Length: 485
Image (cartoon, rainbow, N blue to C red; front, side, top):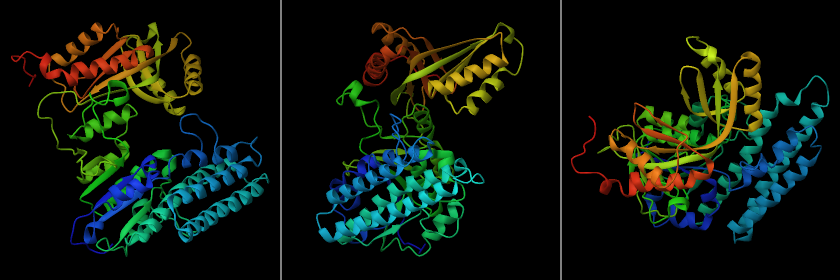
């Protein structure tokens, strides 16, 4: 990378925001910037909203996309029709992005080249695997990578073309490995791609997916673009990493507590970001946060459509000015997996066996409690996978009683929750609202307070905890009550 005289940022735009192309030009990508102000920025872009669902499978419903159909033995050639549908969707998006016919035709040619290249590859792979010496399952992860990367390549190409049309010297940095003859480690891929980029005069638009030796989808599946952001920031020694979302990082979901009640979190630290990730409300993927934290690079989360707002600054050294809850969030559809065995007292090994089974079946552990003869894990995953865990443990421990029930987990999170009244206030407001907690986890580190409730009480619990611990916190505390040192 050519040396720069001005510190640069690395910025990521999510799929929902990418779909609002015209607004992005007026806010994040160009806005009121001119001349040198347009540069010293690197953008990592996601696929347009819904495109990765069509290419892989729907993230929420599980409806099969091209990958799921190709991977299914019963799918036949349905994957090829699905791929044609994706091509049509991409070209329809091109028609929305480009009013100039020449630019639209150029974008359509790019889509055809990539789509037909993938189609030919998958046909050849299908034929190869029709022979017994070649097994399809050995190649499926590579297929998933290749299909996922189509979405980012499409949105990145369009963004570069659009910026060029507006007089910006944008440059496509395609890290998807398309027709590349060699493979490198992730950081080396980035170094090679940016070797001749002059950030003072060029605006790099980078694909969110990187084809590299680490195989990002094996570890991160669809959370890879934030890892790309973090490693580019580290390798290029960025001043700051920025994630542009379609909303602010706020003190609660405004759809639950009301838009007038929530507050934008002005600053916090990576510890809070980790707790949010554990609740499925990712400010950033925890592995990506680790890279930034270790390199001392701050992260800013901004609303892409409010460019003048500073957003939320996340740094390792941002300690709380006073003990307080910063955000109330949670998860529905959590499984309380309770393992009870009277013979457990004083015997080692139960924890390890349970953890091994949960890991083997890829079940996400949110929280855990235990006493003399009971270990309860709060899990997020498919019922099918959890039932497999139950079957394995029942064979291993025939005297154990295993129960499973659906609950909701609500968490009050902050950099410092050491105020002695936070727990009592939480219990009080829940009781006043008629919510009886099934359990409470208040850990010694005092960065999160977890309350387990019935699913029917989920939104009520969030609303009253936000009211009691954030909105009305200052008014609810007597002046003589001080935090524990």
